[in-house]
Length: 264
Length: 136
Image 1 (cartoon, rainbow over the protein chains, first blue to last red):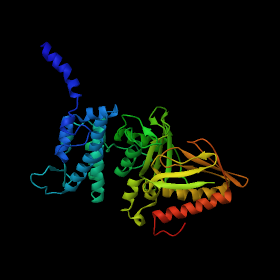
Image 2 (tube, rainbow over the protein chains, first blue to last red):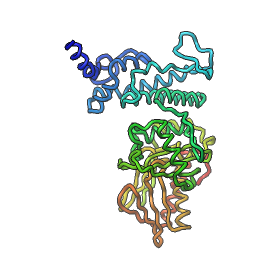
Image 3 (cartoon, each protein chain N blue to C red):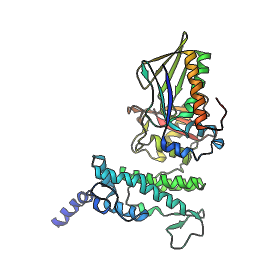
Image 4 (spheres, rainbow over the protein chains, first blue to last red):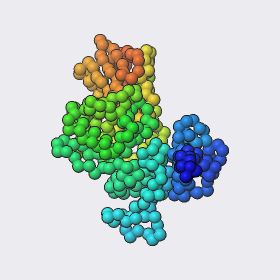
């Protein structure tokens, strides 16, 4: 009984020790022969979240491994998966499922052990999504496919009912732009960032409220569209200097689509 | 001596080569394409950015609007697209005083010289980024 308890207590600790040797040499160069889905499975088994944690602490081997996963292997597999997307009938034996839409799309369950709500997992999921979305757009695939992948991979619910009154459409492109520049995990410098824990759904709620209740003005310097600014009276993120802020600026195109939105 | 220049983000520049500029709408041209950094410095201040996302074509077009606003109103404000950082321009006698909300210092440039810098900069940017575009 005591042994079981001690083992249970030790598990989280053991789980935090990444198995670097299964992935890389001592310098952090990826040496695993696996590629694509197999490498992603291996990275999850090796402890991707713990690798990210080590990288954040300055471990150079962890940093190199994580960088290779994030910059190369995950987006690369995302592109491969986007290449597989097609109209039904879906190929036999493939990893694809048929949605109600009639499209054959990836089954994202293979990422289940990569937590959406943990920083390393979120970054790797986003890296895979970026590759997928990039290739999907190059192929001219339906935007709904990208949106549905965004929901599945990043955990964004984007089907919230809107209140009556003025509103702006948050498209996949607009959301991607905001994620790239203003997400808590974004590395973009000199730009406002949303608070940790912001989700696609909560972002949409913020934008809807800012557009409905905020002050509007024409966009500046001949840029198209309108600017909405609103003070929520509570922290929603940080401004370009990293100071907490409660204000949101939303730029809306003449087509009533969100161009960008950021705390300021 | 005023220095007005730009640097494109290399990855974005490579990606932009595959973009059909003629088909891009105004929002894409001013918010999505050609991100990088601008160089704006002179004696007394350096307002160059190091953010990587400043829309270079948008900046060039905006500076032209700034010149027009200065001629009309004597002052103008340039807001960056992705933050509340801004450049502030004020016509003081025959000089333009330039300050910013993100860096210290102040630049003073004779207005005719500033206008000429802006004209050349816009011409260069539009020529570099949109080869088929007529000179600004």
